[in-house]
Length: 280
Image (tube, rainbow, N blue to C red; front, side, top):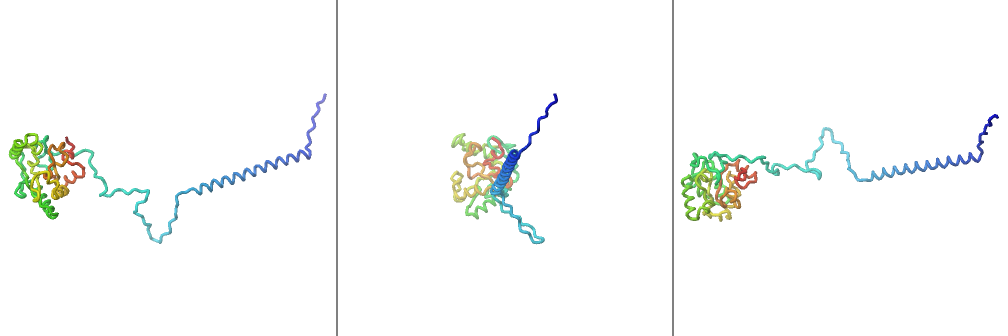
């Protein structure tokens, strides 16, 4: 039997009308979506624009040949580098080595470190106020005494160089009076004395000539402690350092190092030569 072909449907007015309505609805929805998307993007852009940000101003044009000025005033976001007076002292990574030459201005002599030879005698002794002392130390001491006089303090050298023999007699006298332990607190044994180097100086004032700790509380004693390093001296046995130096506080005892070494000593922050050289 021959196959029958199914007749094609014929669109009527009703179907076409429905199709037109669907197309219009879809087009309207797409238009609404596009409008909403457009307004949403504009709102986000306006929100970002309203956030605070860096203000960049355009500089006014400079006259021909003029150069822009550079401000040296630090701003809140910049930290100025410290100047020479502000910079902390730069110390070497390793403490300097203590000289062993008895003629060196920096020689370290104490209870544990003897002079070599123990009978050492300086060759360049001079006299200040009738007392012997190394010539460089004597010249510096005269300047110190002169400066003190201008400040209203009359300083006087009471004791300078002492030989090993004299130091022996002095220590024995103290031991006889106060016992060995007390003698060792205030007097060095021969070969271990700062005075034997010719660089030690016992200095007091006309108002307080005694070699005692009360001198440290006088105006002259305070002035000397404050200004001694300007002339190359340090107070060798400071207060509170007996456990380091082995000797009691002697505000009258100066030790000459020379201006350069004394300045470096101050910059190091050390209070004693033992601490400066890093020795026990």
